[in-house]
Image (cartoon, rainbow, N blue to C red):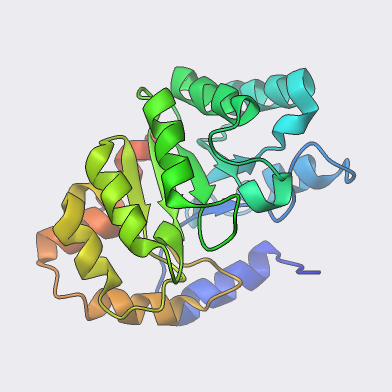
Length: 236
């Protein structure tokens, strides 16, 4: 039931002190809404200075149709990442159909953002199995296991060097410190989970994480810039 427009996004970004955003849609594509993909591409192009990249949220159940769309999205429409939400697609991260798309993302040179959390299909250990099967793909573990499985997220990321941790939505005030201590600032990326969470909340966690200026720069911009091939001004 969420409706999220670029205008809503820009307002929340301004309130939360976010200069640039990498976005994803709210719908798995392909799906029942034929306008979901063109609407997402249009949102990406609204303001390239503020919306700098997008993850296409794919539904692997559509097989070749989804595969062809994803390839076109990366090669022709400037999409720079793949988003997979195991709960809504009703497939665990280590399912063969999911692994096929994660490997394809690696071949295309873009990272994969997984939703992770407390749901049976979105657990860090499952994402670890996917990372093991797809060593050439960079995987961002969104929410890094949520409220109850963050310790598994740390263990999995320590085991697989192609996993990056993204701590948005985790209520622990020191979760960013724990992530950096576990895998280093080079493999932690800042996220907000807008519109579910206001960026002010995530900024508060970041600002009180005790990071050095260099670590904060890596987490806030340099890591995601490297993963998504972005040219970012890191002096801001």
